[in-house]
Image: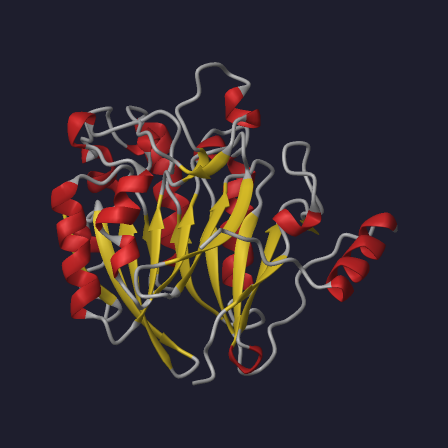
Length: 330
C-alpha cells in the first residue's frame, strides 16, 4: 500500500491561517468531553542548557497546567533527552523537569542516540531514569535494561492501550522482547515510540541530503554497532507483524522536523507514522476523538504561545496540524 498523508480539514486551515495572519497567539482549544489527549515531547537536547532551559520548563508547565483542559492522559518523550551524553549537568536538568510529572501523569522515554554511547550503552539514562522510579506505578507494564526499553498500560475513553518505548536502533533481543509484549497484549490498542524512524531513507552522503533526499522509513542506523537494527528492519521484524498497532512516534531528524504518513501492516491494519523534531519548544498533542473516529494532531509551543503554522524546513501547515483517521467507535 502506498503511504499517504491525511490532510488537515479546510475549515481548520482557514481558521488557523486567519489567526496567524492577524498575529494572534493562539493555543489549542479545550478538549471536548469524551475526548482525551496524549502529549509527545520531541527531542529536548536543545533545552538542557541554562540558555534554553526555559523551553523545557514551559513544556512541562503547560502539560501540568492543562491536564484537565486538554484531558491529558499520557506523555511520551521521543528521545535525545540530552545533547551531550557525558554531561551530568544536562541529565540533571532533564531529570528536574521530567520528574515534575511524577505522581501526576504517566510518562515514558525512548532512548535516543544522544542518550547513549555509539555502541548502545545507556548507563547514564538508566541512572537518571531507572526502572525503580516507575515500578510501583499501576500503569507501568514492565521493562528491560533498567528502563532503556519499557511499556505502559493505559486506559482512556473506554479503550485499553499498550505503549512501547524502544531505544534507538533496538537490537534483535529488544525486538524479541517487544514482540512478546505486543503478543501478550494483543487485546489492547498498541502504540510505539522510538527515536530514529522517519527521515532520509538512505544514509546521507553530504549535508544537503538530510534536507533534500527522499524521505521515508530509514534504511540505515546510527548506534548499537553491528547489532543495531535500521528503522526498516524494526518494521519488518516487529512493528508490521501486529494487527493492534496503529501509531508510531519518532524524533531524531531536526533537518526534516515534521513528517507523517500512513502505511499498512501485514494484517491490513493502518499504521500512522509520525515524526516531530522541532526547535522553539514545540510539543505535539494527539487528541483522540472517538465519536469522529479520528486523532487531531496539534503542534504547539507553550513558551511562544502559538500553534505551528509552518517552518523554514517544513513550511506547510498540514505538516504540523493534521488529522489521522482511526476507528474507535466499534
